Length: 98
Image 1 (cartoon, rainbow, N blue to C red):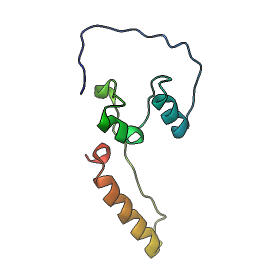
Image 2: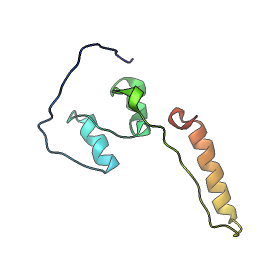
Image 3: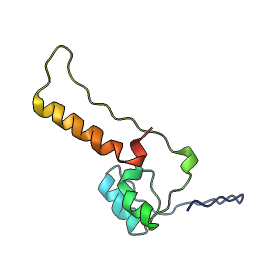
Image 4: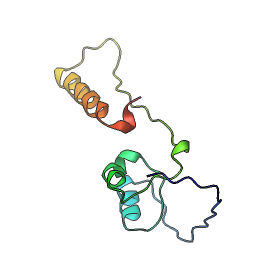
C-alpha cells in the first residue's frame, strides 16, 4: 500500500548511525531506528508483508547487474552455469525485471 499525500513533512533526524553495510542497514530499519536508502531486495519479504514500507518509490533508481569476462577466453563450465543461475534467479525477482 503506497500512501499519496499533498502534505509536506519535514523530518530532521537526530541520530548518528551511518553505515554502508547492508546487514547493519537492514538491522537498523527492522529495529525501528530509522529509514534507509537501500536495495528493495534487502527488504523484499518485509515489504511484501507490510512490515516495511517503501518511501518515495517514484525516485527509486533501476539497478543493472552485469556478468563480465575477459575477451578471447573460453568460459569455464562452472562460470557459465553460475551466470545462468543468476539470470534465472533475477528473472524471478520483480526488482530486477525490466
